[in-house]
Length: 303
Image 1 (tube, helix red, strand yellow):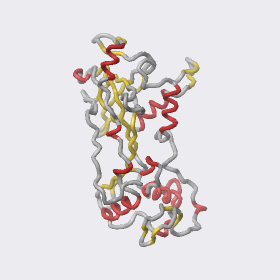
Image 2 (spheres, one colour; image 1 turned 30 degrees about the horizontal axis):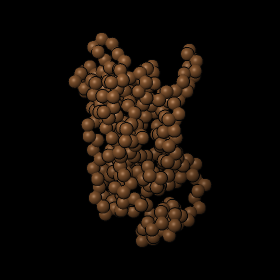
Image 3 (cartoon, helix red, strand yellow; image 1 turned 180 degrees about the vertical axis):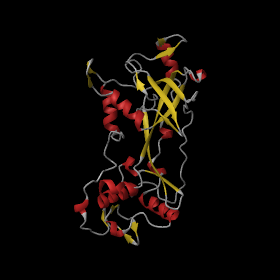
Image 4 (spheres, one colour; image 1 turned 90 degrees about the vertical axis):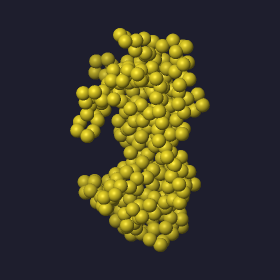
């Protein structure tokens, strides 16, 4: 069972995280995604959070319970808004989908803006843009000139590829959309003039530097449950997120306006499903989200 709303929230700060340094409004870091720590089996972890501003100006944030295969009240509310208002008008009523964040081990191969980081292992926190690049790199695809290009495992010592993490300052934001993978080749280092393949002894030394990632992953028992998120939202916003007349299916035992759900079914039946012309589901993978980790890991092991 997910932690109830009365428990203390745990801090999940990512220690020893790599932060690129801007010079002249940009950076270009050559890094290598690394395999998992010997005591773990996943080369990355994923966290999902909702964060949005309330009408009173304050901010509300919570973990998205879809990560744990559980119903999430924020996702449920958003789907209700899509059903009620349709694809276009619904954009003005939803609270925003969850934002996934991922953490992996990386080796900094070359970093002209901060050469002291080269040759060191860090934890690296990144978003759906970079994760999509990882997923795309693993997928076979046709190229107009080169023909079939085979996918590869970016986390492999020998068969992976360097990742060029590029950032360009654009106002208050940093754009990373020009980042890309190079050609697959064994893990390497920068000697000041060229990239040189690492020998087995050097690889063993890097493996000894790998961080565990399990402590960065938000645990089910440490986050607010469905009722806890509803209660926290009400405390901050002054009005409920979900009301009985919205027809939202809620987990058994959840209290909506004094009505306690006996089972996962709409608290009040409605007949307005005909206007549900657009009902996106936050638990379904999209081009921007990697949500089926079992499938992802099976693809990694198959390479």
